[in-house]
Image: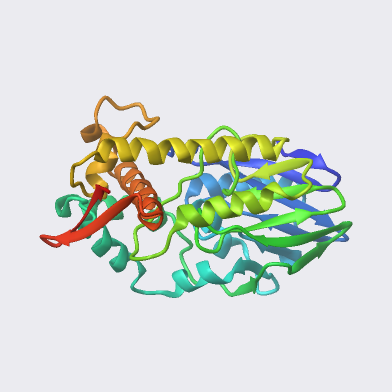
Length: 322
C-alpha cells in the first residue's frame, strides 16, 4: 500500500526479485491533475505488476504524467518506456544520456574488464546476466535533459535539480528547499552503501562521489527520500559514515596490495564483501562484476592520489603500492 510521506507525495516499494537490493522506491507526486513519477523499477513482469497496482491505487492518469529518472541503471529506468505516453516528459541527465546513446558502451566495458583481469571465459556470461542488460528499457525514450539548477514544478512543490556524479557520471537528485526534502536516488542510502564502480578507461568516480557527498553535506535537509530502503533524517551523519566506509576500503586495498602486483579483479577477490558466500568462487558472476568494478574505482582513486601505481604488461593493467 502506498505511503503518503508529505501531502501528495507517495512512496511504494517496487520489488526486485532475486536482486540483493530487494526493492526500489518509486515516488509519485500529485499536483493539479498532473503527476510526476520518480524512478520506476526494472523492465520485468514483477515490477510492471507492482507499478500498475500502485498507479491504480493512486488513480494516476499516465496521459498526464511526467517522469524523473535519477540515473541510467535498469532498476530506475527500466519500466519508463512502457509507461511514458506521447504527452509525457521524461526528465534525465546529460552524461548518462550520452552513455545510453553510445552503441559501443558494453563492448568498451567488456574490453576494459579483460584488461583489468576479469577472466575472459566469464566476461560474456557476466554481461549476459547483468541486470542492466536483462531488464533495461525495451525501446528508446525521448528524454528531456536537465542540468544543475533546473527546476521541476508540480502542484505546491518546486524541485531543484542537483548534479551528484559518482554512482553514475550524471546522477541527478531533486531538492525541495521550502520543505527541505531531498530525493537522493542512489547517491545517499541509509542501510546499504551505493556501488561506486569503474569499467571504462579514465575517470575517477570515487573522487567524484566524495566531492558530491561534500556538496550535499552543505544542504539544509530534513528528510532524505532514497532510491532503496527506508527514508531517513540526518544526512550529515550518513555522509560521514559513507566517507569513512570508503576510507577503510582504500586502506584495505593498500594492505592487500602490499608489495605485490595485482589486477583489479585479483584485488576484489581478496577484499571483504557483505555477501552470503563462503568464497569468491561462489559469488554469482554479476556480483563478481560489481565487486571488481568497485575495486577498480578505488584503485583509480588511489592512483590519482599517488598512493598506487599502474603498469601495463601482458595485455593487463597491474596495480602496486608506491
